[in-house]
Image 1: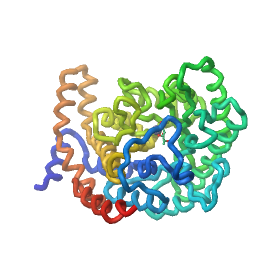
Image 2: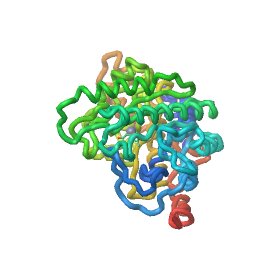
Image 3: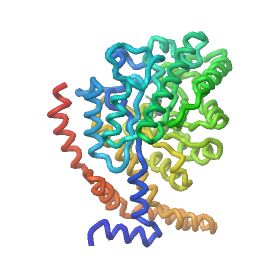
Image 4: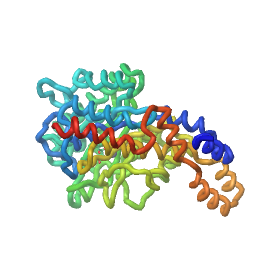
Length: 411
Ligand code: RNT
Ligand code: ZN
């Protein structure tokens, strides 16, 4: 008997239907963040510096400089990723023949990306870019005290929702449009109330127009570099916003105090918001956006999503950027890790664990949870990969090395 057949039997002994888990893993998309490919640079201003308290560290050679290069790199990554994917694009990745101000961006500048998505069988998700811009230099956008600056960012976000809607219509799959703004203060502010009231009013303007084929999301944050003392769009702010305005809430794994559990938040916020967008990320000591790995916090997030039956209300996106290693490999490692955590959660013998818990047998609960860790996950993962026509093991690295030699090193 081959390893997969044996594994299937072992899981069945624990009451787990492997084929069902594989089917769910196959159809659940992970949205690939374009910004891993070029250190959140974008094509608007190739020499511009990254703003908004974000920081990409490292100078590994070969980063994408044009939309075509970025798409080619993404294609290389997707070849090594099993199951469904989407593209998660930021507005600064517009394709323009002349400079287009961000508040005038329209679908036209993203048609190339959306055609490519149609070609590759990817859905499209989108993000207004409220950083790396002269009007965001003081770190304030939608909460800016100057109504002219605020209105510019409102128009930008409105434009992005329409772009997302048109993409969603064409691809017959709604686009998640996620609003994150950097608005914050380095040192202790006197007025914490004013910016939050302005942000609330600005967001209501952004979301006033109903746009079909989009799903709106808002993303909170704890702090950023040079923005340590106060963040306008804090967790409480956006939790309240998403709950009252019925938008999705984006939970970025790096946007909380390191001892907080993002997994634990899921069932709490799901009681009040229509859905969540996950920004799967890995903070090392701070919101450092390291490449995602299949670590305990990431596994716990996916366990909670699956155990709670929340998959239909969850959009899975990645948010990390590492410029110190091969960027295509970074995409592959992080996305495969997220998918491993997803598949692992789908293979959990939850019914058996619940039974122990419900009967008050906490000894059995603990014992079974630990024993379940030895189930032959690897054989099912390999099956998932081969059914998707993807390398089950590290062979993909040889392809990436070849691509590095032939393409990346020529840049
Ligand atoms: C920033 C947020 C945000 C960005 C991307 C580029 O802290 O996490 O999601 O990382 O939009
Ligand atoms: Zn994020």
